[in-house]
View 1 (tube, rainbow, N blue to C red):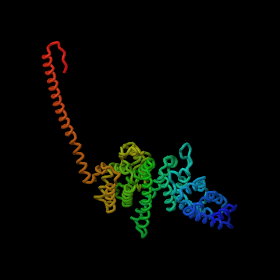
View 2: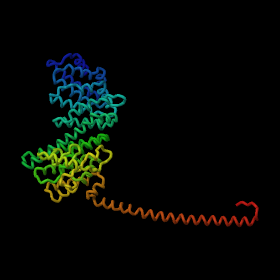
View 3: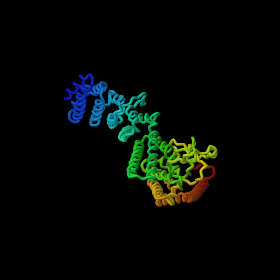
View 4: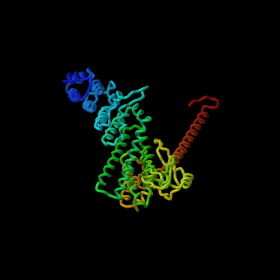
Length: 497
């Protein structure tokens, strides 16, 4: 049967409405036969390789003038790749550049179903990646990867409007990251491919802004579907954060740094922390609630030590510390300084005065990250001088129910964040008593060390003095013995001891 189908395909010179059904059925049947043969009879796949059937697939695709053939072809190849168990079979499928040709082929993605099949095809390939097979899908020059179509084509659809497409693309990228190939890792962390990570955070930032808008609208005018809409938005946000966490867990140092810097510079400093400000306008309270929730999610899900410690270090500074030096505005004019902004433009003279009086602050940050403390400026033009930690406590004592719950959730999340240095918790005054006791014991021990060392040195001095006296006494005894013996032999006579 396989021989017959293959022979019939080789005779096809054009694919049109007349013979498309036969071609589709032939492709489907070949996939089933090859999958069966891989598990039960190796002669099936040996014939498949001998006749170079994958090359025939590519030829049929070039002849096709109807969308149904690309659909079936992508499905056929995907099914084969997913179900082949033999490593030898996978090597053959990935060799001869046939897969890269299909990956880079100009499909007509105006057909949404075709795009869905194409993304599934990419995902099937990525599921078979390891340090051996990935080398068949990249092009190298001087041992450096210069082309990786699977990855490049996949991330083109990373921000597609369809959630299923985005999910499949993320699966492809994670499969690539977790291979652990050094040359591939250098490729994905080199320009322009690093833009993917900053674009990822920018996309996430937009989702956060949309969530705040939904919360604000619900507080003003709740509707019957408000809760379900907000829950859907929350699910998307948490899915993104878990994806960030999975990416970091791949252990690519440069990727972790890129994600950390992007989260801080695109979301934490310009939006979330400034949105914690205490305001009297009820419409702006939604920004506080959303920010508290997002801070909890980020700290709870994204396990990055630098990120956690930098966020907490920032809590020791007032809100004005997060007006960016580059084009920083005041009075809420710039919309990215928090979730909300005032509609009126600030006075130019006031802006100039603020700029002249700006002071630099040194936000503690790990040296392993690329974020530079000098990119944060303290602005003297605002009336609030409360540190963000004090703002959180103010919400606990004086805020409404949502603010109290949000602030307590942030503090509880900080206590559960293992990546956080204990000194940060101690600085916030929320270090657990057990750890405080350990710290006190350590401090007491450190204070005791000088006294112990002093006693040890004193004992050493006493022992040294006693040893010196004993040695002196021994030398005097030897000298006396020598004198006595010299007297016994008489003057001028030689003697030995």
